[in-house]
Every structure is written in C-alpha cells, then in structure tokens.
Image (cartoon, rainbow, N blue to C red):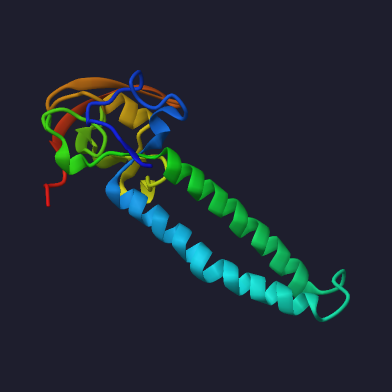
Length: 178
C-alpha cells in the first residue's frame, strides 16, 4: 500500500525507514512501475527462454549463451527486488498540490543566483528520479537542503565540498494542478 504525506512533511515526521529518500512524485513512481512491469513482462521471460534453450544444448560450462543469460537474469532479478522495495516504501508527494507556494518544498522549481552572479534553475525531486543533466536535483543534495523552506529574496548558505557560498532565491514555481 502506498503512503502519502502532506507537502510540508519534514524529516522528523517522515518515514522512519529511509528518511527523505522515500519521497517521489507521481511521475517518478509511474516511471518506476513502468520499468518494473517491463522487466517482469518482457525482458525476464525472454532471458528465461534463452537460458532454457542454451541449457538444452549440452555442456553449460562452455556455453556462452547460458552463462551470459544466467548473469543477465541475476541482474534483472536484483533490479526487480530493488524496484519492488522502493515502490513499497515510496511516499508519493504531488508538487501540484502544494498549498504553500511561496516557500521551497519538495517538487519546487527554483531559480537562484550564486555569488558569481550565475543564475541556475533546479527542480527538487526524489533520489530515484533526479537527473542533474536535466536540472533535477535530489532532495538530499546540498543545494536542495540549503534551499528548503526559503522564500523569494532569501539568501541561504550552500555548503559544498568546495566550500561555503551564499545563494539568493530568485523565483519559486510548482507544476499547476491538472
């Protein structure tokens, strides 16, 4: 059964097992379910068929199809277990339903300026759906942690491995409700 949390959920009232890393958007959980279904419905049965065919060909110790198939089957099963656990522990948070849109919370798209006057825009998402190349940062990243609960015009201290830096929040937006 999937659990849902209000938008303003914090680490203290979040899930005890896994902490903030369990938060995910409806789109993120859908992508995980699609991947799990594809593995179970399509890819795993194909590999099982290949392994079965290769096992019938005789000596398995020198059979490349058999060895590769078994290895690939272990990888698929490992990914299936991982996805199943992540989906079971997911806390789905819909950023479009955020009532407090003047502050930065999970799912916000934030534009901020660095001390060197560089503007950056990031969207704060769960660890399983973040993609830095697409401007999406994980909820547990230093940038997201610094920006949490900040409002437009606030200056916050960003602590990174390169040192500390002050950043200013320029804009906050959330997806519109469908």
